[in-house]
Image 1 (cartoon, protein in one colour):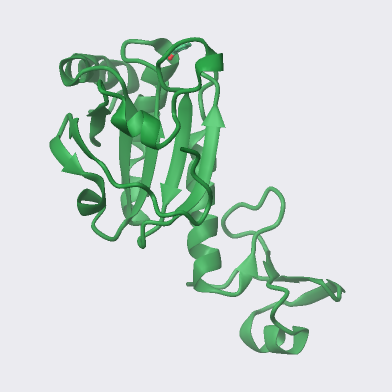
Image 2 (cartoon, rainbow, N blue to C red):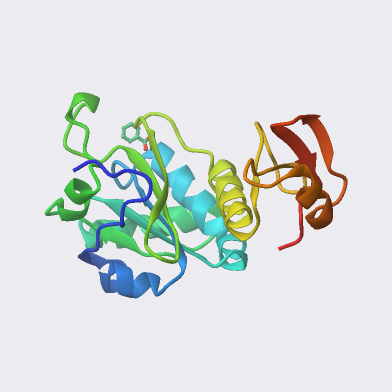
Amino acid sequence: MSIRLGDEAPNFTAETTEGTIDFHQWKDGNWAVLFSHPADFTPVCTTELGRTASLKGEFDKRGVKVIGVSVDPVESHNGWAQDITEVGGTDLNFPLVADQDRNVSELYDMIHPGEGDTSTVRSVFIVDPKNKVRLTLTYPKSIGRNFGEIMRVIDALQLTDAAPVSTPVDWQPGDRIIVAPTMSTDDARQRFEDVEEVRPYLRWAKQPQT
Ligand code: BEZ
């Protein structure tokens, strides 16, 4: 089943490194990043999971819970966790789903047979507090993801949910934002600082505090 932005993130119950988890219950009204990796004890995955573990403080600040998925068994995940600690320098501090029956992988369309075998590709789903899917991303198995980009999108989603703004190309937190088309320039000048009208449809402003 393919999942589109705005869809409800399908719920599942699965064995993980932190016991049996019901996804929606575990999420408990928080933001979540659900991401798959192809296999345990593989090099790119080891770097990705180490990086994700090291970002726990940043995810926590934003109210985001993280959960990984692969089709390997929980014993394998637990054995690999030691390598993640040693190589990445941070203990595995989020659950990894042991999706041996491929229930989660199929629910989220994480297995792409044209990519070689029946392991999961590198999928990412950012899910909001109401369980709506807000971003999907799919990378090939041989290419590690940029978790700084995932953090940037979380910042942009939380900002654009809180104020009538959009984020421009290459936006980084603290950069100027774009006033939403639904707001007049006069209203924007009341609400935001440093409003600059470049075109009637393109108004820059200082990023508001949310
Ligand atoms: C890796 O994590 O290095 C990897 C896993 C599966 C296929 C290719 C690379």
